[in-house]
Length: 264
Image (cartoon, one colour):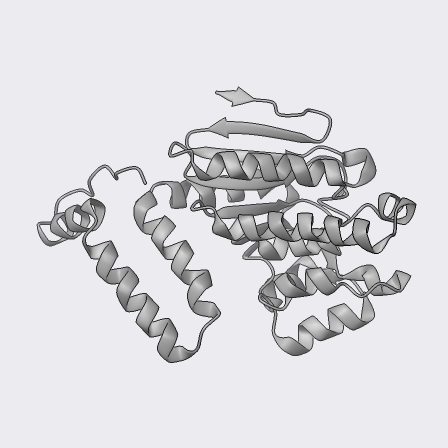
């Protein structure tokens, strides 16, 4: 089954539990216009409640993955009110990526700059081709990448993040992997296979356990060590009450095949 949602800016495809959202403004380097941000938000909100979807992939058409915000659109209406509304809209979409129960994988085939680099960082996982490049390049036009910084600094070590933010210089895909911005780097001809393999592996797992784990992962990062262990203990206690966990543990102990997992 596949469906197209607002072909002008965004495509949505579904296949075997994996939903792919494809940024479809390749001729504009997939800049995050207000229209595209709205389209992504609508789809994420819909996906969150769809139990048939196990994994989400964010992909793009054209030569670039995403070149960040639409500077022409921003420059045409730079008032504080307009800018506040734009960045609140973008921030809400970025937060939604972490709030939906399904893991989100960025499929990066080209350049990802500024808010495009933020999009990669905000996704739960990322696979990139060897030719992909990344930058928080706002500083080059006098605009510090403040909102991209939030996601980038939650992926990269401090010194490496600061260098990217202060210089605006590009890093290559292998450097991005070493820094922790992406998980895997593959030849361009292997990108779809690598993304499909990762998504498929996750889709085979219990969606209940995946959803609980994703929620806990981000929540515990924002508290101290004791608070993190407290939240983790509560989460795994609740997880142990799930049908999936009990059936899976019994199957392991009894050396039987893993059961069919329950929906969320």
